[in-house]
Structures are given as C-alpha cells and as structure tokens.
Image 1 (cartoon, one colour):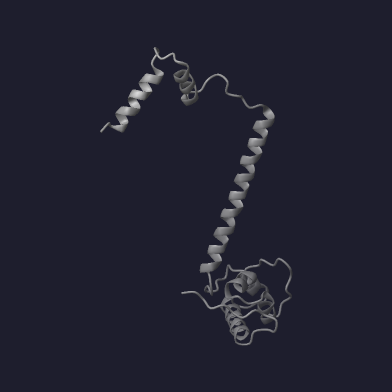
Image 2 (tube, rainbow, N blue to C red):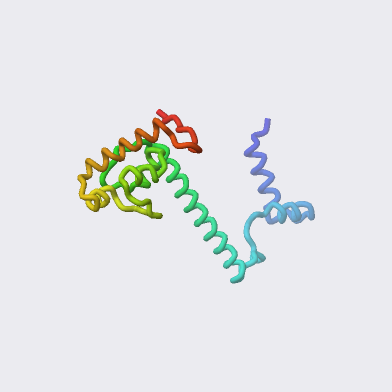
Length: 160
C-alpha cells in the first residue's frame, strides 16, 4: 500500500519540477498554483469607501445589538428590586411591573413626561422622609397587584 502523503509529494515534485514541460503538466501546474502573481487588482477610492461604509454599518449594528441584549438581560433579572432613594418612579414601575401613573397618584403628584427625578428628590420636595415615600410606593404597588386596572395585561409569574 502506498502512503498518501508520499504519493502527493511525488505528484507535487513531478508537476513542479523544472524538467516537466509537457502541456498537461504545465496547465495543471498553472491551475493548481495558488501563489499570488502581479495580476491582483488594486482597489480604488470608491471601492475602499464602500468597504469602509460596510464596516461602519456592521459596527453600528453590532453595537446596537449588544445594547439590546444587555438591556433584555438586565430587566430579566431585576424583578421587584428593593426600592432605593436613587431610583426614579419609572424605574420602580418597570421593576415592579406596574404603570407609572399608579406610583405618581399614590404620591399625589402630576406625572410629567420623562420624569427622572430620584425618590430622594421627590421626598425632599414633599417634605417627607425617603422611608415614608418608599412605604407609600410599596403600598401602592401591593394595591395595584391585588386589583389590576382594567385593560391591563395579566401579571407574569416571576422566574426562579
């Protein structure tokens, strides 16, 4: 039995030896020769611009994909977090899966759009302690979960 490595080495040496000048050997040698030659085309500015734009689009797509996945994982594990003074009411509402208006109504304040005030600042503006505000929020969350508002989706079961 012939060793395949030895057979391939013999064929290689036969085809690429300087003495092999047969037409078939020369054609096969040219087809199998992977070494670069001078006929490689150089890219012009327009082609480089297209490649650069493609790389930029791929980078931005990857960036937003990573942000989306990170955000999804973050909210998946942050259910019913302990309410802290640095949290905003929309953050607490998202964590406890209740509408933000319920928390604003419990504190008897208007629900301004894009309100990112921390609970500490709300307590200071209402001349209350932070613990008192957190207690009011927890009571409102408990009431909202016991009696969900009409047209609200059913609460999801927390995952273990």
